[in-house]
Image (cartoon, rainbow, N blue to C red; front, side):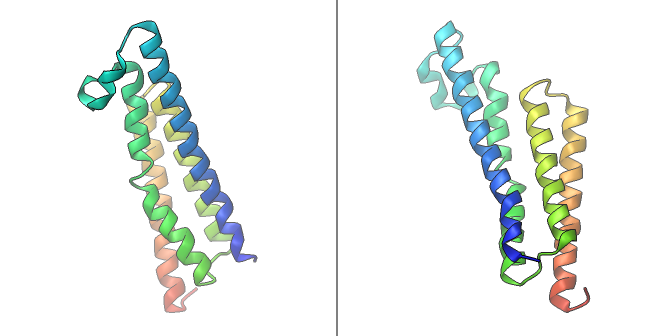
Amino acid sequence: MNQTTIFWPLLAQVLLIYIVYIVLGHRRYGAVRSGEAKAGQYKLRSTEPASSITVASNLINQFELPVLFYVLCLTLQVTNGVNFLTLALMWIFVASRYFHAWVHLTSNNLRLRSRSFFLGATVLALAWIWFALHLLGAV
């Protein structure tokens, strides 16, 4: 398998971050334009209006668990560990992050958000276990 295919889910995750940045910009601009907020309120998260605080929180989320995803993608590529299983796991992780972001930015349903986070975290943990087995020569 071509080892560079691992970069497609990585690029999809990067795209998600830019999408969240765009949503954040629109929400903040809309809040200022409607009078819900003043531009100076964005200096402190504690004064950010409700319409954009969840987006700001989601953006922070994109730099937590996904950091382990980025590292794993790079190490899989470097060690020739990319195969159909690892690629599928990475795509499932990215899909869970898109779903998590969609829920967070729309209904913010805690049950759905928690389940999508848990799915992504579990899939990523399985991928890390596979990577460890790959390094040991067991797979």
